[in-house]
Length: 277
Image (cartoon, rainbow, N blue to C red; front, side, top):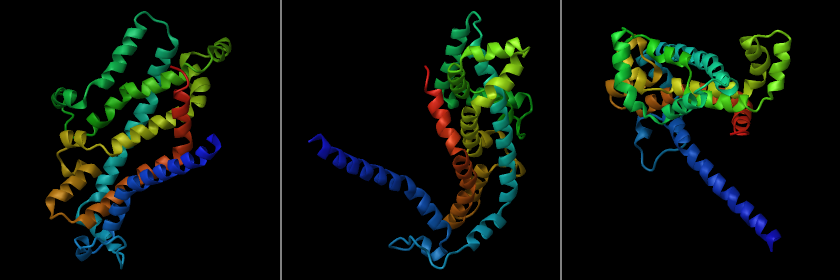
């Protein structure tokens, strides 16, 4: 009886997963289809799923109406610096929490973890006044410098992984004369690559798609990011959905490419950090 049930359960599971996959892909397919439609096909009924002829010039027109090239460059600069800051700072803090037995370490760690529960909207106004008082508004500094001070979630991930590494490995390096940063750089970081790639992907996605913080700190058009530019495009002209979807398709490409490149390490990183509580 159990043998007969397994194929049925497997079939139901595949149907459920396939249905979920199609539902998840639906917005992307609709966005891609809309980006290639003519103005007439946008509001046609029944909806046009496969536009013909394909309007590839929608992409050219969208990128020539406003300086999206400049805004993509701004977003790339902010994202690269933020990723570098997160990957540089988080392992150092996580290593301290994982290895050093200082008094109050657990309390500090709990306080740090609890900061993840604070909604960003609560700290939004204090942070704006802080950065405004030090004249960082209309610069990239509020969007990049905080990443060099660590992130609670990334520190938690890395600490979990460091605790799975036997301390004997570090003891051998200490006997050979390695210092703290030598141990971290030469012994621990080479085996931490999957988790670091996971941190980089999370930070890349967070910075690249961030809208609210650039909206607060960047008022000059020459400093806009892609997300701000798309919002400006939407408000500056009548809603030209085919052009807007063309920009959205290009904007999501870097995230997709990065995920597929780092997919192997991403899965390993999530699995490894869940090995020990």
